Length: 177
Image (cartoon, rainbow, N blue to C red):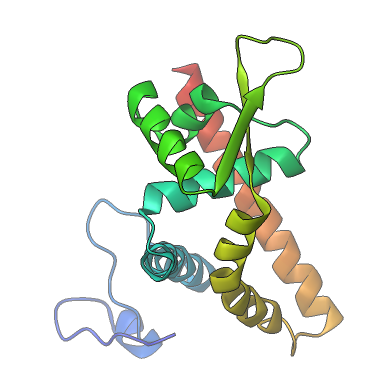
């Protein structure tokens, strides 16, 4: 990770650590938080690059991801839930589903318990299309832990699990208000 040296105001410790002083009103964080923020930013950039390489709108890539994750969790989703997860209107979600179905990336079928609802699935060709571009990135990420000792792996896993808990708490707070 590149270090930034501030030439503006800051403490001597900011200059010696290579970190810029935090902007007023924001949390100072630490090296782990800074590294996580960089990974999250790069993840967003990689998702945009993936969409571009697939010649698909980012929303469609995200739709495929949500459908695959839901199916793998044993709780497949339909167009309404997909729209909610994408943060788009039901009409926009339906339009995305229609396009993905017409392009052969996704299928929809009646829900087995409620024929008024639909279940979405990603086709084999749609999955292969996305994974063809995503596999090189996944391989690079998998290799990132190659040089870690067992103790470092345990620490990294614990940190990431704690971050996941923090994100879940944040999401739960939003749905309660």
